[in-house]
Amino acid sequence: MNEVLRQERKFLISATQRARFEGQLDALLHQDAHNGDLMQGGYQVRSLYFDTLSDRDFNAKMDGVEERRKMRLRVYHPQDEIAFLEMKQKQGSNQLKRSLPIKREDAQRLIAGDFTPLLNYKEAFTAECYAILNREHYLPKTVVEYRRKAYVLPENSIRITLDSDIQANEFHYDIFDPELAMAPVLDPWKTILEVKYNHFLLTYVRDILRSCNQSELSASKYCMARRIGLRYTEFY
Image (cartoon, rainbow, N blue to C red; front, side):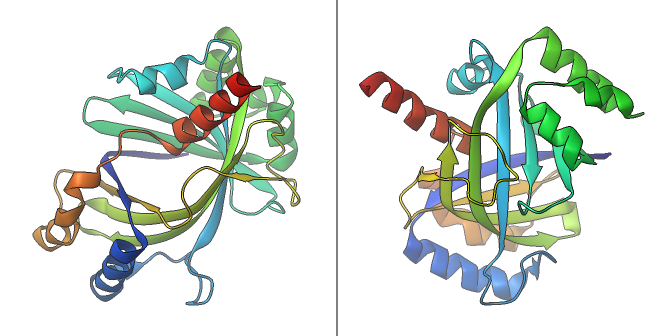
């Protein structure tokens, strides 16, 4: 199981800002190994988010509750034979993310609302997830997909990501479906820049990001997708 505790900040930037930042980041930081070649421009991320019947996690984020969580399944390609069961928890200024790979067939049963496959894993994390998902009546809520380009620095575990082409589906939840229909969530000319780090940012990284301060985001991609879906439901 992978466990990461770090600070996290998000910014909404324009295409012009992205072009400038990308050039600076290309020159100063290391490319993530999953970025691929120049033509690929990053990699795909597809996540299924779970929430309670009353949308407790969504409402906690929108209300700015200090201690909150998100539960999700994540894949990087519909043909993947594993998915990552992940829990993100907000703890003051830090974000704790725990992640565990599970088999494709087990992930498909979770998508269908059957959480019992988690009892077949020896890690305490899966038992905790099973208890939360069952006790609090979690259900699949929305699939979010986007293209990510990532940069890393070993110092203070700094990781910077550029997420674009953000889309969602609130009606079909099969993250392994290569033909899953998606609808745009964000202006295609906008990018979400995320900065994750431990302790503090190095000065030259902070200087690169200084012009972002006016565009800091509080909403997550999950909440952005849910808000659009809820508005659509209310309209009809």
